[in-house]
Image (tube, rainbow, N blue to C red; front, side, top):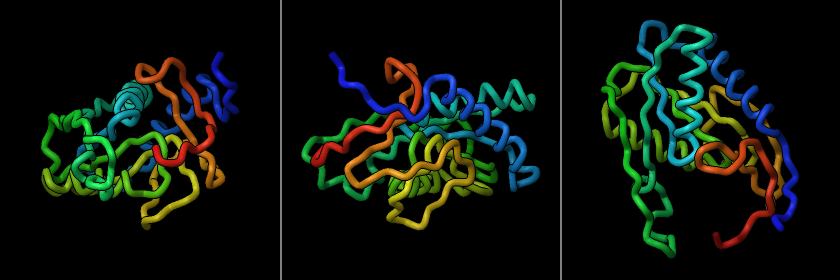
Length: 184
């Protein structure tokens, strides 16, 4: 039997957050005239980006291309991990020059994942702007990176993690608090 995890948001709340993020992106884009592109950060940022793109098409008649970025080789702890990393690949099927890219991720915590994704994108060209959309913005930043679009802001203790569950990666959807497993 699986231990009960304290839920923050269920599937219905998670979907409402995705709707809110899509509306915010549609309504508050700071770059006029630059084409909009979404880039999901592997792993959970990818299905979240696709879902936001679907909503943008429904609510704003915006057909927004979606790409995927794998930050494995850009991590600042790359050589410090015990296991050899698995590369899943970056797939950005559009030029990044002079477009507005919104990186999409599940949780913004230290800022290191976002920094790695920015570096990966900039290696492909020079966008007009890079923004950041996250389902959860939690405390604990180590770098001066802030999201432009936020679903929920949550505080968590040092021995607590915030996880976003999303189909098809997970078997359910929502946001949960879980004990931090040190050394993982």
